[in-house]
Length: 146
Image 1 (cartoon, rainbow, N blue to C red):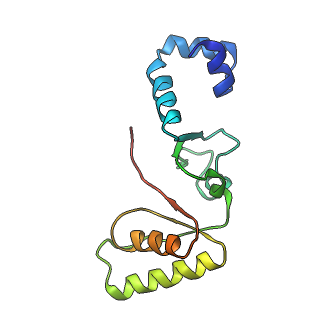
Image 2 (image 1 turned 180 degrees about the vertical axis):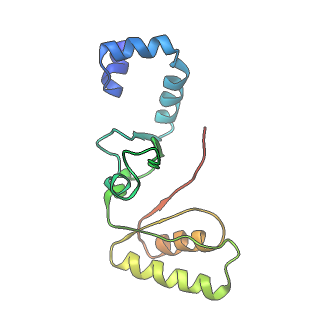
Protein backbone atom coordinates (compact mmCIF):
# COMPACT_ATOMS: atom_id res chain seq x y z
CA UNK A 1 0.00 0.00 0.00
CA UNK A 2 1.51 3.34 -0.98
CA UNK A 3 1.25 6.67 0.84
CA UNK A 4 -1.73 7.95 -1.14
CA UNK A 5 -3.66 4.73 -0.47
CA UNK A 6 -2.87 4.94 3.25
CA UNK A 7 -3.95 8.58 3.35
CA UNK A 8 -7.26 7.75 1.71
CA UNK A 9 -7.98 4.56 3.64
CA UNK A 10 -6.97 5.78 7.10
CA UNK A 11 -7.74 9.48 6.74
CA UNK A 12 -4.21 10.64 7.53
CA UNK A 13 -2.47 13.69 6.12
CA UNK A 14 0.66 13.46 3.98
CA UNK A 15 2.72 14.68 6.96
CA UNK A 16 1.18 12.00 9.20
CA UNK A 17 1.82 9.39 6.54
CA UNK A 18 5.49 10.38 6.38
CA UNK A 19 5.72 10.01 10.17
CA UNK A 20 4.08 6.59 9.89
CA UNK A 21 6.68 5.50 7.32
CA UNK A 22 9.45 6.51 9.73
CA UNK A 23 7.89 4.34 12.45
CA UNK A 24 8.00 1.30 10.15
CA UNK A 25 4.36 0.39 10.64
CA UNK A 26 4.15 -1.58 7.42
CA UNK A 27 3.48 -4.82 9.32
CA UNK A 28 0.33 -3.24 10.76
CA UNK A 29 -0.86 -2.10 7.34
CA UNK A 30 -0.25 -5.64 6.08
CA UNK A 31 -2.30 -7.04 8.98
CA UNK A 32 -5.06 -4.54 8.20
CA UNK A 33 -5.19 -5.67 4.57
CA UNK A 34 -5.22 -9.36 5.60
CA UNK A 35 -8.09 -8.81 8.03
CA UNK A 36 -9.98 -6.76 5.46
CA UNK A 37 -9.73 -9.64 2.96
CA UNK A 38 -11.08 -11.98 5.66
CA UNK A 39 -14.10 -9.72 6.20
CA UNK A 40 -12.95 -8.17 9.47
CA UNK A 41 -13.75 -4.47 9.80
CA UNK A 42 -11.41 -2.40 11.92
CA UNK A 43 -13.04 0.47 13.79
CA UNK A 44 -10.74 2.86 15.62
CA UNK A 45 -11.56 5.11 18.55
CA UNK A 46 -11.72 8.13 16.22
CA UNK A 47 -13.80 6.49 13.51
CA UNK A 48 -17.32 7.84 12.92
CA UNK A 49 -18.43 4.18 13.18
CA UNK A 50 -17.11 3.85 16.76
CA UNK A 51 -20.07 2.94 19.02
CA UNK A 52 -21.49 6.00 20.76
CA UNK A 53 -22.32 3.90 23.83
CA UNK A 54 -18.64 3.19 24.42
CA UNK A 55 -17.88 6.92 24.30
CA UNK A 56 -20.79 7.63 26.64
CA UNK A 57 -20.46 4.84 29.17
CA UNK A 58 -16.71 4.38 29.58
CA UNK A 59 -14.44 6.87 31.32
CA UNK A 60 -13.24 9.50 28.86
CA UNK A 61 -10.48 12.06 28.97
CA UNK A 62 -8.65 10.86 32.07
CA UNK A 63 -5.82 8.48 32.77
CA UNK A 64 -8.51 5.87 33.43
CA UNK A 65 -9.97 6.06 29.93
CA UNK A 66 -11.05 2.46 29.35
CA UNK A 67 -12.37 2.72 25.81
CA UNK A 68 -10.80 0.17 23.46
CA UNK A 69 -8.63 1.91 20.87
CA UNK A 70 -9.45 -0.62 18.16
CA UNK A 71 -12.46 -2.85 17.56
CA UNK A 72 -12.07 -5.79 15.19
CA UNK A 73 -15.56 -6.57 13.91
CA UNK A 74 -17.10 -9.28 11.77
CA UNK A 75 -20.73 -9.19 10.77
CA UNK A 76 -23.24 -6.37 10.82
CA UNK A 77 -21.43 -3.46 12.49
CA UNK A 78 -24.52 -1.25 12.22
CA UNK A 79 -25.95 -2.95 15.31
CA UNK A 80 -23.12 -1.51 17.42
CA UNK A 81 -25.23 1.62 17.88
CA UNK A 82 -28.58 -0.11 18.46
CA UNK A 83 -30.25 -0.39 21.86
CA UNK A 84 -28.22 -2.99 23.69
CA UNK A 85 -28.22 -4.96 26.95
CA UNK A 86 -25.18 -6.76 28.28
CA UNK A 87 -25.65 -10.19 29.83
CA UNK A 88 -22.68 -11.79 31.58
CA UNK A 89 -22.31 -14.23 34.43
CA UNK A 90 -20.85 -17.39 35.84
CA UNK A 91 -19.22 -20.05 33.72
CA UNK A 92 -20.46 -22.59 36.25
CA UNK A 93 -24.09 -21.42 36.22
CA UNK A 94 -26.86 -23.55 37.69
CA UNK A 95 -29.66 -24.86 35.50
CA UNK A 96 -31.97 -22.31 37.12
CA UNK A 97 -29.57 -19.47 36.23
CA UNK A 98 -29.35 -20.65 32.63
CA UNK A 99 -33.15 -20.78 32.33
CA UNK A 100 -33.39 -17.28 33.81
CA UNK A 101 -30.73 -16.04 31.37
CA UNK A 102 -32.57 -17.59 28.44
CA UNK A 103 -35.83 -15.96 29.53
CA UNK A 104 -34.25 -12.51 29.90
CA UNK A 105 -32.42 -12.76 26.56
CA UNK A 106 -35.56 -13.92 24.75
CA UNK A 107 -37.66 -11.09 26.22
CA UNK A 108 -35.07 -8.44 25.39
CA UNK A 109 -34.67 -9.84 21.88
CA UNK A 110 -38.45 -9.71 21.37
CA UNK A 111 -38.29 -5.99 22.21
CA UNK A 112 -35.60 -5.47 19.56
CA UNK A 113 -32.73 -5.11 22.01
CA UNK A 114 -29.31 -6.35 20.89
CA UNK A 115 -27.71 -8.75 23.37
CA UNK A 116 -24.02 -8.13 24.15
CA UNK A 117 -22.13 -10.93 25.86
CA UNK A 118 -18.91 -12.84 26.00
CA UNK A 119 -18.75 -16.28 24.51
CA UNK A 120 -17.61 -18.18 27.59
CA UNK A 121 -19.54 -21.25 28.65
CA UNK A 122 -22.36 -20.71 31.10
CA UNK A 123 -24.42 -17.53 31.27
CA UNK A 124 -22.62 -15.72 28.42
CA UNK A 125 -23.09 -18.55 25.93
CA UNK A 126 -26.71 -19.05 27.03
CA UNK A 127 -27.44 -15.35 26.42
CA UNK A 128 -25.94 -15.56 22.94
CA UNK A 129 -27.69 -18.81 22.02
CA UNK A 130 -31.08 -17.57 23.27
CA UNK A 131 -30.73 -14.33 21.34
CA UNK A 132 -29.91 -16.12 18.09
CA UNK A 133 -32.58 -18.82 18.61
CA UNK A 134 -35.10 -16.00 19.08
CA UNK A 135 -33.98 -14.53 15.74
CA UNK A 136 -32.44 -11.56 17.50
CA UNK A 137 -29.12 -9.83 17.14
CA UNK A 138 -26.11 -10.36 19.34
CA UNK A 139 -22.69 -8.83 19.83
CA UNK A 140 -20.01 -11.16 21.13
CA UNK A 141 -17.13 -9.41 22.87
CA UNK A 142 -13.87 -11.32 22.72
CA UNK A 143 -10.95 -9.80 24.59
CA UNK A 144 -7.89 -10.77 22.67
CA UNK A 145 -4.79 -9.28 21.16
CA UNK A 146 -3.31 -10.19 17.79
